[in-house]
Length: 176
Image (cartoon, rainbow, N blue to C red; front, side, top):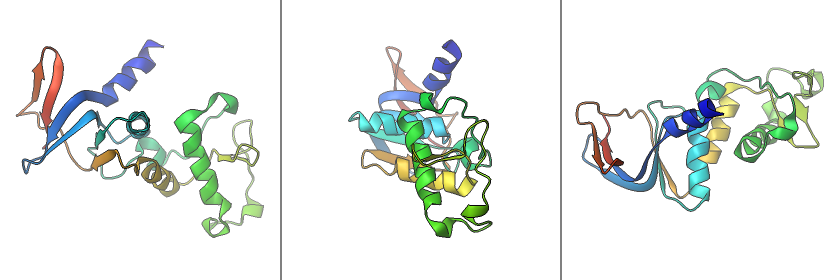
């Protein structure tokens, strides 16, 4: 359990802080998430849905990490344990493939619908567990489209200017 917790903490860097871009624009938020992975997107969305203002700073242009970069096969095992924002992601995937125009490379009727011990398309739960990278990226874009979330893409921490801290709390950091 400790490794999972430490991974989650690395994505949420700041609380009640501000970030400055190279052009001296200052953006304040309750929470600033650094990263563009699926975990960063879901952390930002969860915070926003809990009423917090959020800034997501991604060093990448595309959101979603490995899920939107080619890893489109989910090891589901017991699908009942996948819930919350992760389940919402797989439901967005399902909604995409429910449209017949999404089936460009083969007909849906020809699709084998095999996952790892489970069907890839679960009509009862309205989820799909195998997907194309661009479909995953579109799902993450829908998820991050929240009025309380501001996204900065292709932004890096400025290691020369560093991070301003007071009493152990990060108050401000600069972007490259």
